[in-house]
Length: 433
Image (cartoon, rainbow, N blue to C red):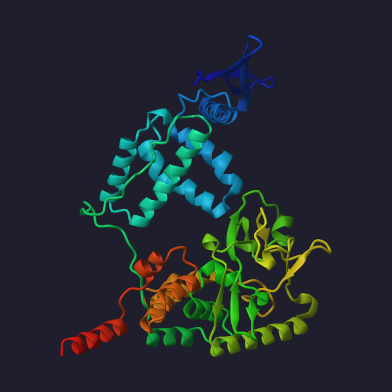
């Protein structure tokens, strides 16, 4: 990179400011510079100059590709590839993984200098440091995608991120970090539902997690149009996710989402994780509970009248189980006649949206008073295990939970429960009598 020059500039009022300046590509044989003034200190000017220089070299398409660092290339890849077609939450996850794990170890190398041996050593070091198999797989995915992009755009001739292996038949130096898949016994669930009974805002979300195995975002993205009371079916067509936005103004906060007080951003509809659109059979009891809740909401809507909170989307696609190419915000106010009403299942008496963040309070309460190992996802583990206990076909469980691979269903969710052990013990006794 060219040297960043800093100079002091005197103001007419007697004060002084600092300016950065660095050379860029020549045009028609003439030397060109980028500069900016107005900084209070040399340090501020130099930092701003570095950022401007990185912006110019990475995004100005004049950087010498054989000299770019892997760290700078990853920034370029995120901005010019990932942000085009990935969900904001996915991009945010990539950025955090790159910042916390990849850049500290690999960012210093030139992109062209990274070999398969370097990457394989990096993977082995992560394994020995106790990272889980899923974490390592996620990082390998980022490496593969970023190097494929580098090949496609002629930064390098071939990808070094091929056939990277995760160690299996060796003991890591540090025990693997993993959260146990918790199975919640029926008597504990009874205590939880007693603590959060029918008509409590968290009762139905807990029921949907426990009896349907829905993910957190799927629960709070559920609309009444997704439920067929006659056939007793739930159609999983979407999830909700949080869009962080530091630039929202006051008017935008008031118009969008219904939860503007919770920070800069808004809730939006997205496809289910892994595009796992599916249909779920529900019990008579859960069906009747949802009918009662729908009836209460319609009565409340009549009672509150103009004071009832309504929500709208600006595209019908998400309501039809199709994902448009941009986030569909959950808007509190309809802007025109083309807006489409959203009838969310998880709302308060006055119609305001109950967001997934309410589960943080619920989880703290359950951990403190009922079951210290509780988290919302454990409801999903428990649901799958209960189905396995009664010999439900693995393919059915996979489809119901929206897994991409039956192996995930077997390896992660179908862990041994007391019921399974007792059934196994009985079978063994009968086999060897």
